[in-house]
Image (cartoon, rainbow over all chains, first blue to last red; front, side, top):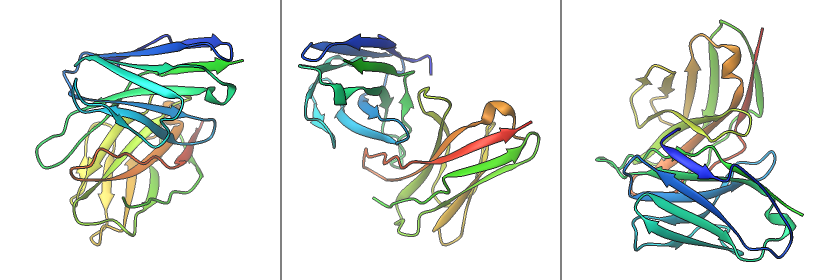
Length: 115
Length: 110
């Protein structure tokens, strides 16, 4: 979805380096998410944020941190990258709708390789 | 959150309807069924969702059984571009969680 952008799209880094993945959205949504996907598997939630002052850990947050700089921006950092963080990373946004519906819209992904 | 069960793979002839099943036998009354697809490592794309009633949009139809324990996503006229992994997700009202399983890999054959 062009309304959710991720940079960079591809990144190669070395073990121990700090890197940041960025996500921006123009959908005006309050909620933002970071997921990772390993080959052949579904997506797993790393962190999520319901508004600018809200940060929550997902199921696999160890080794990651996030920053919600503005409603439209949500960054994921790997403080000291390790090879098993090699994966596809997706950002998503959503709003809680009337009736409890919540459709998440995903960015194009960042392919990260940690050597 | 209710779990879902999908066949790992399916084939469909181009131009025919693709019917993708999903079992969610532990679904509770306020949980929605969502369908997404992922084309070759791109970001998951929203297709459709529903609670009780059947739903249709420009992409697909969603048929939910009366007991809500299973559903079927129907792509009425599959094209080669519909080749993707399709995820059925059950999500409760008021919870943020989307639990992705391994999905169904649909291959549309020419």
